[in-house]
Image (cartoon, rainbow, N blue to C red; front, side):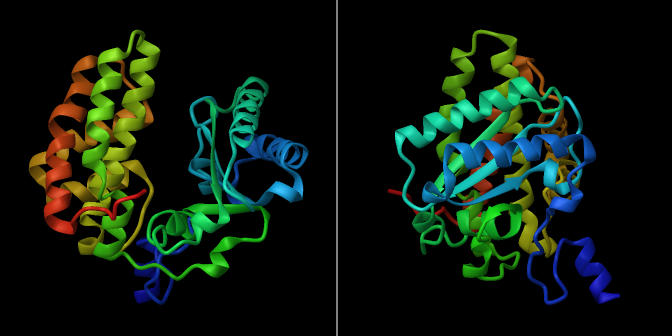
Length: 273
């Protein structure tokens, strides 16, 4: 029974957080996209630049919706990424988005191996690679990272910098000129708030999930007075809204409250250079 409970809470039998995705969970409709990713990366970066590549998000979790889900990739480079590396990633993103209607855009994160394995990133990017990323190419860096548990330290280092994002979001909201820009911003803001709301309560619940609906529901158990706003955030993360009132609620009400509460409970994330 204990092992069954651990699985339901996204944990291994020893209480560490289980890796959440796998290549054999990629839905059949998205398999050609993944094949194209491999080809693009081999042609663009090759072994001299690329140490390893990873999928993350709904596609390797097996929950992607054709036409609505985006393709998320993380590339670990042997050295720190250059402007040329970033420009090449943008070209791959655009090519994939044009070629495959089953994805709603593609996003590629670039980091050097040294950064991903650094002490500073041990409980942020390191956790991300070890638990939330699915190996696609190269040698998996998870073998050089620790096993993670749903602790306050993990909560602090993954989402303890929400307050820094709020001013940027408000500026982007004020400058947004189209419904498309407002929807894109609302989607990103909503997903970040739901993830932060979940990790706020993660140590008390004692597990891990990346599901937006489950995350919002778990948050609501501990903060029922904000449960409705978090459900709205989860819905917006799945189906973005261009309504300025929704975006305003996220950036001017739920966001500031969550940032203050998070700091009070878990503290602030270690500053980055």
